[in-house]
Length: 481
Image (tube, rainbow, N blue to C red; front, side, top):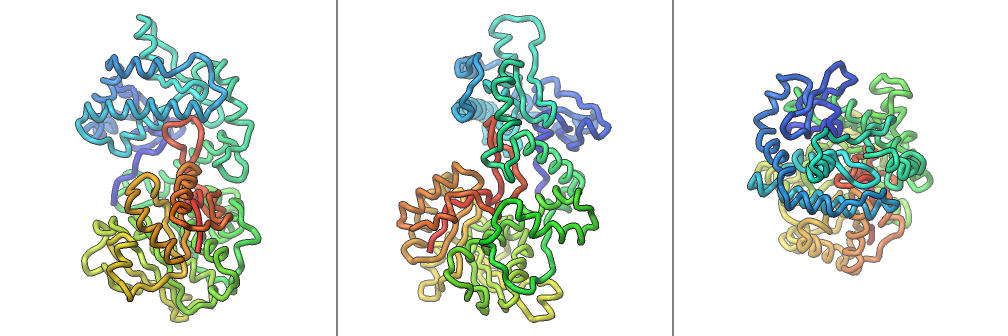
């Protein structure tokens, strides 16, 4: 299993970059004296991380001595706080892209995810976009010999920053006074940030870095079976996660209702897949005959590690459809090549089910294909059967492998296959919706582009921005049949 990526608290310099412990956990953090981008709680942690950090450390240090980069960064920023945070985010995107290119030239390779995070999540003023590195560059440009001031964090969340009280006064209301558009339950950006800090602490307890090789992220698949199908249409909202799964988590883990929130957010990351499938089926079907079908078939397009690792999560579909006898999932995607053995491919595999389903001889069957969906359809020919639903989770179809995804989308639309696409954020959802409509798909309004009521509530901060969050299946790009 891959090692955990350093959480945002470590990237912000508020936790050790090696063991992820923060100042509130009895440790004292000290900056790497060369790059000044990461902190460590001890010489042992710094030494343990040095092999991985060494090249990036040198490359980060070189950024401040790059005259062309320095001029491009300083030229882009205004001394006045911006009243348009979306325009500021556009400027920051360009700044981060320029820094990334410079780093890749220094390293002579592409940046890894943790390396991209170091510049994407770098603390920056909400009013103007300045970072500590830019402030140092400005001081050097002016020939100042004094130590420049650094960014100040919000006292409440410590994840929003400002370079001066004047800039903070200009944006504080957007940070802590207004609901965040891409958050949940009407929370402000400040409250969302506080949740993220709690989620990082929870993840460190459930899967500490030292155990990364043997433990993954928290995942939970309820084993109870509902007595009957209950439509999701009546009460679809982000807070519905609490009513749907809160009491079950309290019972299973023996925790109080006050302590359930981080468990619920973590569990929603995996459960958003089966719940989004059920939500789409509920909206795409005119009656409830589908809830009594002997064997519903779901095709997962562009499937990769998350669908394979969390295979047992999909049993929630059986658990909410007690009249269904079997469930067939067809996982399809080129990335499955590296995640499966030859003997696992193309064959129907009967998966282990919970005791209740096993006693009732209910089955969950998975079948894995390492092709794109449109190529699989060609290969199967007359043996290809329409699914009850085809779904692409966080496909990124508007950003990666666009020509291939266009072929798949065209196949879906032309053959009237009930389909839905999810996305991490509004930007991706709206771009993918245009692709779906361009292929002739007639989108169902409630299936996007719109917030997904069953998207994960385990939010992440958008990189390269001072605003915004994204989440697994957080948005519905579009659904059609």
